[in-house]
Every structure is written in C-alpha cells, then in structure tokens.
Amino acid sequence: MRRFLTISALFWVASCTPRIEYRNIVPDVPEPLRQPVTVPERRAETLADVGVILTDHVQALNRANGQIIATDCILDAVEEGQPAQVCFEPSGNTSMILENMKN
Image 1 (cartoon, one colour):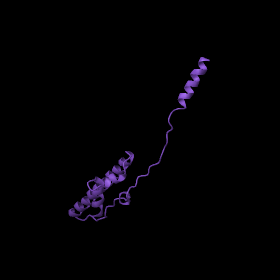
Image 2 (cartoon, one colour):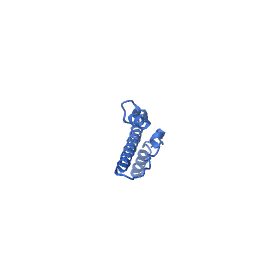
Image 3 (cartoon, rainbow, N blue to C red):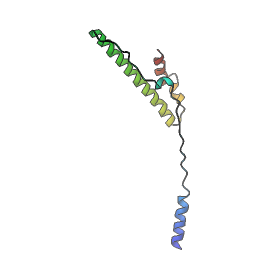
Image 4 (tube, one colour):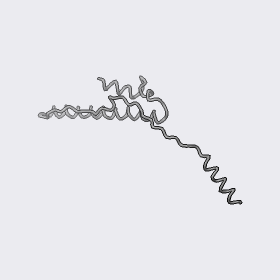
C-alpha cells in the first residue's frame, strides 16, 4: 500500500508539469538587407586601378558587415520579445545602415 501511494504521488506530480508550447517566430527582415553585396568588375592595368579595386572591396565589405549587424539587431530584438521596429528608430543602427544603402 505504501508503494501504491508513493507511485501515485509521483504520477500525480509528473502530470502537473506545465506544457511547453513552441511557436515559430518569423522576423521581418527588409529586402535590402537580404540582397548580396556585389563588387563592380574592373580591369587592373595600372597601380591606380589596383587602388580603386581595393577601395571597391573595402566598401563592399563594410556594407556586407553593416547588413549582418542590422540583421543581427532585428533577430536579437525578436528573440527578446521586442518588436523589430526597435532597430529602425532614427537613432538605431539599422536605420543608419539602410539610409547608407540607399546612397
């Protein structure tokens, strides 16, 4: 009888655990952040051309890193339960990146 009461108590406690509910959250990432960054093709005939090519690559790398930072801000905001619009405020990092992408 003791075992029956103990086992019954264990089953009762085990059945009282809260249910875990899984939800898929899809953040809204703007289309410009999901586009690949391209580098214009140039022919390198002089040393000045090589400098221009390197400048193009540095600018493309900065833009790609900015897109990654902006996307990360959106994902972090959604994971914390905040709206993704937090990243688009005028002082936010993402809004500055999107403005620079338009230029």
